[in-house]
Image (cartoon, rainbow, N blue to C red; front, side, top):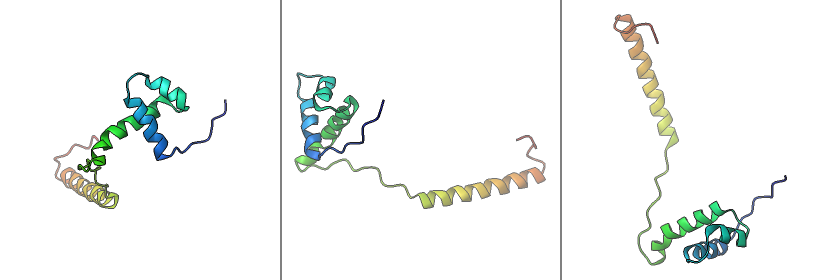
Length: 101
């Protein structure tokens, strides 16, 4: 069974399908079959439409999570690793840490 290539749908198509999914009368599966997309995709577009509907009327849209600064996180991990290694060595020299690890 061959896979079909990835398709990119326009924003207008996504909105049309999502609005149709919000309207009562048809199931998600029926809408997906009609538009030849996966039911999970219809559900995702519907969810996005509901979440972003407030922005259409000038309301504040929920901000996305701030991007994670990986460089700072890697630096912190390195710092904590050094501190743990130092403390482990100091405690084992003092005889307060058993050698079982």
